[in-house]
Length: 102
Image (cartoon, rainbow, N blue to C red; front, side):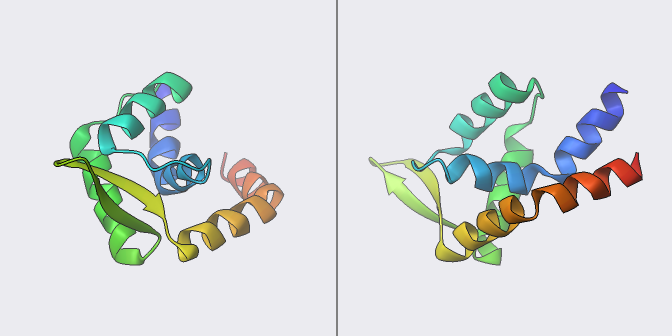
């Protein structure tokens, strides 16, 4: 069962990252890793998060900014905000789909 939970979690990781960033403040990759571990109990590697963040940037849902001299932080673009809004607006349909899969 734990393997299934981890697999589902990874499939929805992009939505989770967007949802977390929609709370309002930009976060760095390690901040996201710590948050995921703390709130969901799922260990995620830096490589997994880094790859996902860069894919999301290419998709136009995130932008990168420098905080200080070296720390990269990620924040939502307008496209990312619209995606979060669409997901939240269709929450029940998403839950129904996941229920059918299980």
